[in-house]
Length: 67
Image (cartoon, rainbow, N blue to C red; front, side, top):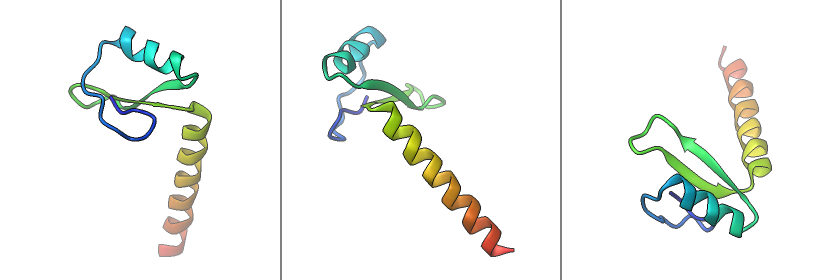
């Protein structure tokens, strides 16, 4: 699990991770579900979604330029 400031918080049970996110008034976002154990980060989901979409758009733009 990764904290708000990017610090490693170690392996936590789901209930404890959700409680930490709730106490900070942010969301618990699953970053790498395939990893063993899965990696989650405490952050604002809206910000995560915006950054992800921005990254995808940039990748599509670069893909078109390579053709």
